[in-house]
Image (cartoon, rainbow, N blue to C red; front, top):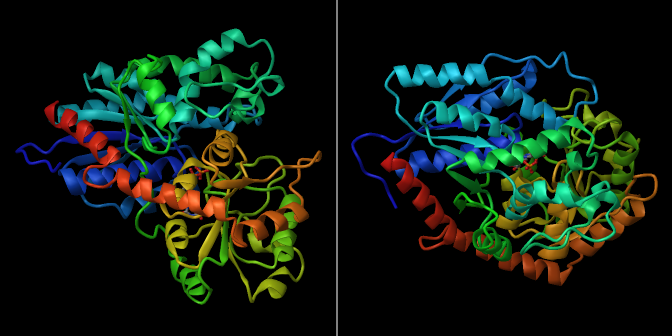
Length: 470
Ligand code: UDP
C-alpha cells in the first residue's frame, strides 16, 4: 500500500542503546520513508561512552534524508554498582533521559510537528507515558520474537505461581503455542529473582498495556501457534503487528570488501560464518577453545573475533569495537596454520552480505534475534551458542522448536570444548540435510511474508493506515 496525501506523516522513534536495537528500527524507518513517504525522527538517548555514540552516529548518518536525528544530552551511570546488569543499564539510560525526551517532544510540538506515533523499544517502555502526555499514540517495537513477548506478558503470573528460582524448576515453562522452555533457558536477568534487574522487568511488563500496539520483529509463519495464542487467548489486550523479518540492508561496514572477496574464492556452501553479534564476548579460555575447535574441524570458516572478557559475555555491548586487538588473543600460530581455509575479521563484518554469499554454508551465532533472522532470511543453517539476554530462549526455539539449528552445551566448567565444537561444525557443514531443508522452507516463508500479499506486508500496511489517519 503506497501512501499519497498532502501532509507527510511523521513518527518519532526512541531506540535503547545497542546496535542490535537500532538496526531493525532503522530498517522500519527506511521502509516507511521510501515506500510510504513518511518522515521519521530518531531521538537517541546517550550515555557518556563516546565510542558507542560514534558507532551510532556514523550508522544514522548513512540513512536517507527524511530520517533525522536528535541526540539527547548524555546521562551518567557513575552511581551504579559495578555488577548492575546490562538490561538495567540499558533501561536506565532511557529512563534517565525522560526529562530530555519531554523537552524534545515539546520543541517538536512547538515547531508545528504533528507526530502520528512514538515508537519505543522494549527496554524503553517507561517512555510510553511521556508520549501520552503529548497525546502522541505510543507503540512498542518488540525487537525479539513472539515467544519472548508471550513470556513478558505471562511474567507477572509466572512470578506469582513460582516459589523457586526459574533455573531450579523441575518442569518446563509452558507458554501457550510455544516450545516448552527449560527454566534455565529463561532470560539472564530473570535468573536471580531478588536482583533489581528482575524487579525492573516485572515492573516493565505492566507498562505493555499502555501501548496502542506492539510491533514484533517476527512473522506469522515462523511462530503461528504463538501468534494465534496471543490473539485468541486474551493475553495481549493491545493489537500485535508481526512485521518481520526486518533485517539490515546495505553493507553497514567498510570491511566488506575483504570478507566478501575472500568468500568469492571459496566453494559453494563450504564456509562457517562465526559471530557473536555486536556485543558478545567470550572468556580467553573459551576463545582459545573455539579457535582450536575450528582448526580441528578441518572446515572453512570466517570468524568475527572480539577481544575476550573474563567477566561479561556482553562486554562490547556499549562499545561494539574491541578495545584491544582481538587477534592478539588467538593461539600462537593459529592464523598461519589456518590461512588457507580461514579468515579472521576483527570486531565487525557485513553480516547479511556474508550470509547471503553462495559460499556460506553455516552460521555459528550467539542467537541475538536479529542474527537469527539474518540466518533465516538467507536460509543458512545454524549452530546456536547463546550468551546473554533472551538468547537461550531463542536457541531453544531454533533447535527444539524450528529444528534449524544444532546447539552447543557447556561442560561443568562452563566451557564449550574443542572436540564438541569440531564435531558440530563438521556435522553442520558436512550437510545435516534435515536442518538444511527446514531452513530452506523458512527462508521461503520469510520471503513470502514480505511479498505483495504476505502477512508482514499486510501488518505494516495496517500500521501505516493507522498512522496516516492520526
Ligand atoms: N552485525 C553485523 N556485523 C557483525 C555483527 C553484527 O552486521 O559483525 C549486525 C547483525 O546483522 C544484526 C546486529 O548487528 O543486525 C546484531 O544484532 P543481534 O540481535 O543479533 O545481537 P546483539 O548485537 O543485539 O547482541
